[in-house]
Image (tube, rainbow, N blue to C red; front, side):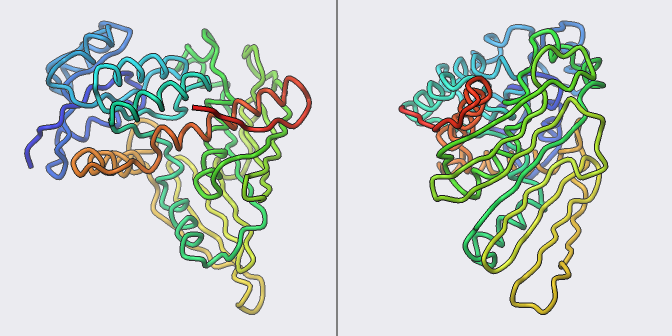
Length: 347
């Protein structure tokens, strides 16, 4: 297959998970350029992976004629700037989670992507884990019935990561967007737009992190379904799966879990079957890549390519990603006011 779609990668954390593209004969994607802030690092990584172009200036990467799509894997607070610059240069964009950490940027990105008819995909890995996909399939096929309640979590001790990714402290990282985006987005994927959010937050105090890093949310969706969301990072790692999604339906209750480098699992109880013992389905670990998410990344990159080649709308395009960012914006407002907040977005 011809390697005729050039990719430029900004950021060399999870951005390294895209290097498989150059040796994969089933894809038309080719990583042709890298950008990172440390010149010696980006030069070394480019040389080791036989990538011709490297730079510390993301604009120089974006402006290249041989790069047709830009993969944004930079620190969270830079996503908006990098995505908007790429879109305004008429490049397709794939961005890792969170889409952005400002509602105003999400709105601006949506307008740019739609007006220019460019493909924009939020690479939210939860939507691409095999266990989460299985529960979504149960929902889509009507096996769960009408959803009554839902629950989602992302819990992950973060203090040891500051030594690896110092920007989290230097900026600092906003964990409402950088962490809670996972469970909120999983629920938006299934239940649609959020109507109202009530959120509490505190500081775990286990590191020098200067702002809130633990969150508990009550969420009401526009379809009337209520959900509970837990995002906890200023904690000692708990003895439970890192990520989870549970849907309580009129026909069945199903839970999907995910853990880095561990098998995913689905547990489901069907009301029509006698007894309440769950059916348990194990899935192979999505364990390749810099952060143990390689298979999920490969799935969404194949989807992104299909959208570019066949002019399809990405499953989580800018407008869909905006739903999650709007809910997180309302959650922060709830933390600050102590009151539930309506979610409202006007493009």
